[in-house]
Length: 275
Image (tube, rainbow, N blue to C red; front, side, top):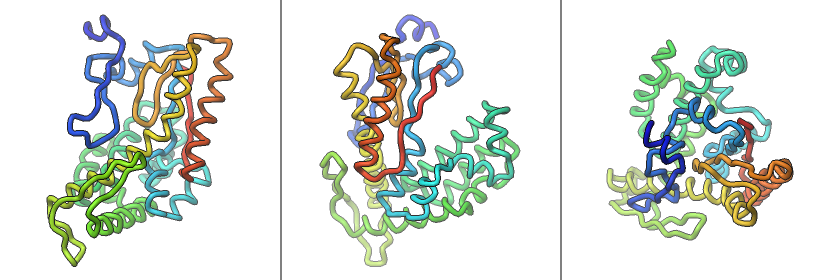
């Protein structure tokens, strides 16, 4: 805490192995604080987040019509999932916010794990353990029976089989990824090939995530009216130094990202909370 107090500014670095375009803070700084403490210390900032970003990317990349239709309806995957466990998610969100956020975080981690190739067995085991602290039994098995999660898992398995037949894959930035390991005519790759295939899926999705956020970085370079204070993969925090132009910039930031998402046909957009 003393280190964070003395050096609040985060410094970022890229992936050591170059397997993702994501950047990560490497010093003890505000992004490493708990969410509640960070919000307390950053009052006045605005926190942006891409809505259901990874799910929306998967729905487009893997052509999952059912999930696209769900996202078009404006429904929240987190509300749907929490309700599936027998809770009233909206009531929990308003009256038990901390509990809602914790369960959502576990479900979000599980969604990323599913997208990026974790085995069904391991995903169920990890999520079951995570959700037990909320009194949810067999949470992993229940998760995998949710209609949209079942469809997402099936689409993921199909994508992995397709990639097994490829020698390379490409990200939205044109990076070529070589897929090593042995192919099998049965469509079942060996462990090394599975590792490369999982890496391809993650790298492609995370590259699109960054591509969606780049308009915010581009706008920040044009003005001193605001500063990006924290960058968080699918969102960021901004301090508006010129309060009189805050509304104008809020509209421009949201619109610029929405234009990029519409260009790609990805059903996401920036939402924000003023802290």
